[in-house]
Structure formats: C-alpha cells, structure tokens
Image (cartoon, rainbow, N blue to C red):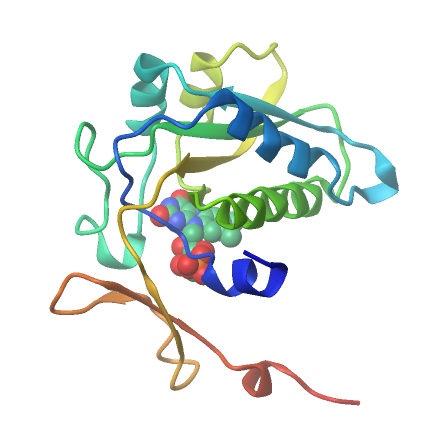
Length: 192
Ligand SMILES: Cc1cc2nc3c(=O)[nH]c(=O)nc-3n(C[C@H](O)[C@H](O)[C@H](O)COP(=O)(O)O)c2cc1C
C-alpha cells in the first residue's frame, strides 16, 4: 500500500482476528515510532510492547472502546479483542509541554505504518492509567500516556463525508458496520 492509500485506508479497528502479531512486525512499528518528529528532538517517549496474553488481558480489562456506540463496538476477550498493545510512556519529571504532541506524531507513524502492513490499530486514551502503569515493567515515576491496540482487523469501517459539524459521530448501520464521518477539506480550510 502506498502512502495515500494507507492514510485513507487507516481506520480505528475495534474487532480483531484472534491471531498473534509477530515480534518482527511489532519491532517494525517501534522503528516507525522512533523516527517520528520530537520537539527539540528530546525523544522523551518510551514504548512498551505488550504481547504476553495474560498481560494483554489484564491491560485490555482496563480499557474503554467506542464511546458513541458502547458497548456494541467493545471488543470481547477471547472473541475479537486485540492480541497486543503498545504502551507509549514518558517520565513524569519530563515537563515538556509538547510531550503529547510527540506522542501523537509517534503514534500516527505506528498507525499508518501498521495500515501499510495490513494491520489494524486503535489509539486508546480511555484507560485506567495508574492501574495499567502498575501492570507494566516500568520504573516508578513513569507515566503511561496512551495505548495502541494492534492486530489483524476483523472489521472494515467505512469512511464518509460528514454532512455537517453536528453529524460527526461514528455510528453502526443495520449490518453492524461502523461508519466514520469526517468533515471535508472545504469544511475545515480557510485559504489566506
Ligand atoms: C487521543 C485519542 C484517544 C482515543 N481514545 C480512544 C479510546 O479510548 N477508545 C476508542 O475506542 N477509540 C479511541 N480513539 C479513536 C477515535 O475514536 C477515532 O480516531 C475516531 O473515532 C475517528 O475514527 P478513525 O480513527 O477511524 O478515523 C482515540 C483517538 C485519539 C486521537
């Protein structure tokens, strides 16, 4: 898949095939993340690849999915839950105001890189950060900023133009397919 195809094809995936993702593929995703832009090139992010099934399950239990259509698009453990997560962390004493921007850049590299490799991902911000932190082999004072679920997709969400700013919620159709309305470039852009 070339770059434009990956950008357009990438959707948040909340149903996964029950198939592990190889360590070489996960390493490739971290490779994409590590070369992302970083404010002052401070590189204060660290990544924890979570792929041991018992640990994935414990982390999964602390996550929340698809708030607009919950619980209908919440994956179910043993059925369509992700086989792994990547946790994006930083030291709490890193007082950079741009650490979330750094995380966004690194995560987007992961999401797009994963899409280009045929993987599905979901950026997860809704999780119990303290409980997840305690599960991971990270030092005291390390904060988990975000999780990224990674696996092979078992759904094909539909990208569509949003009819207006009041109609941007993703929704499920009668065939249980997720639709993701995005405002158009014209809606979002002023040329000056
Ligand atoms: C900062 C951030 C946090 C997110 N957290 C969650 C989350 O906790 N659970 C979830 O199901 N999706 C989460 N998402 C995914 C968004 O819901 C998704 O990007 C949005 O609905 C648009 O769909 P798309 O990614 O397919 O374009 C998050 C996305 C971002 C950027």
